[in-house]
Amino acid sequence: MSLNKKSVDDFNAKGRRVLVRCDFNVPLKDGVITDETRIVAALPTIKKLINDGAKVILCSHLGKVKEGPNEKESLAPVAKRLSEKLGKEVVFVADYNVTGEAATAAVNAMKEGDVVLLQNTRFRGKEETKPQDAGEAFAKELADLADDYVCDAFGSAHRAHASVAVVTKYITEKGGTNAVGYLMQKEIDFLGNAVENPVRPFVAILGGAKVADKLNVINNLLEKCDTLIIGGGMAFTFLKAKGYEIGNSLVDDEKLDYCKEMMAKADSLGKQLLLPIDTTIAAGFPDPIDAEIEVSVVDADKIPADKEGLDIGPKTAELYANAVKNAKTVVWNGPMGVFENPILAKGTIAVAKALAETDATTIIGGGDSAAACNQLGFADKMSHISTGGGASLEFLEGKELPGVYAADDK
Image (cartoon, rainbow, N blue to C red; front, side, top):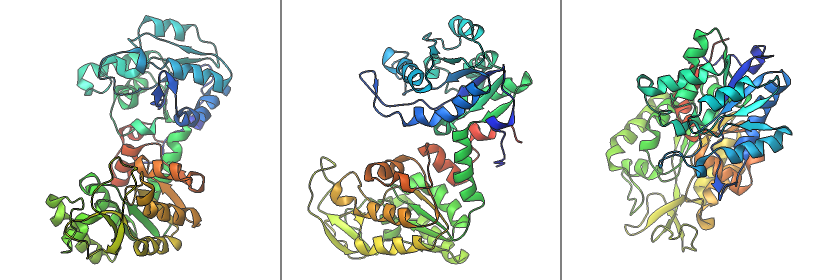
């Protein structure tokens, strides 16, 4: 995948209508934004275009919109917060049609440096459909509002949606530029280049519940990294594949042969594949998830038949921390245990602490590992925390992301 894409610094936006696909999929409670990280992350690109004298047209999805267009999933609260952050009015087009007459009128009235926010793109109902369906028409209507297009929504970059990828075709047809924003550029620089051109030694850490979720990631990273560390629930399928008793621990019996293949592949490539050597066990999963729970630690091959592994043990935490110490690049995706429970968060904390203390470039691949870093207070110690869970995983798989691929090459 070519990662050398045109960015907002590579074209002159003065007087141009620039459509910017942002990720404003923010959590809302009773119409109030409870976490504005994604709004803050979009500001550098928006401010750059305002300062260049562009007419800035913003669009984004919000929520799943399963019940059809509704005020609870309207982008109105985002427009209000953006206005406060930018210190200028962001004109909100409340029309559920997104690209209808109200949007056209708002864009026609724009002066240089003005900002318009369109309604939730998923209100059209065709945002996610395959291009040959009405998603194609929606993409063309979005392009009709603009001269150029900037994708700054990495969290949606793995989806070939109308407002993410299909729109670029129509911008190209009218002679416009398709570029990436600063947020997307940062993701490409860190995540993309970590996998394609890592500074070595390169250590990859994979956790989370299921092997099935990470099949292609494991396969791809084994070829790219020097050491692959496995933790979380997915480790037990590997341990069972080694012939260990894993008790009631999470396991994917259909993936045992796959795990054997990956261990053999690591050997044949001369790569280090690290698995837990001890495990924190309990009688069952905590209910509720943060409930106090009685645990003990056993060697990874000594899990009693009636117990369940819920975190890596202290010897494993030390092994993994030591593996990170001399690394130059570390990518981490997925917690080491049930980190939402303080008693079962020790393994995840140990790994986060090791990453915080290393001189390596440390990249956190979105999702639960990003949540863990934020919750446990290590976020500011990492080189980069990805804004996209699914997108970062697909990047690590080596897949072409539609939202990246669709941007013009330099």
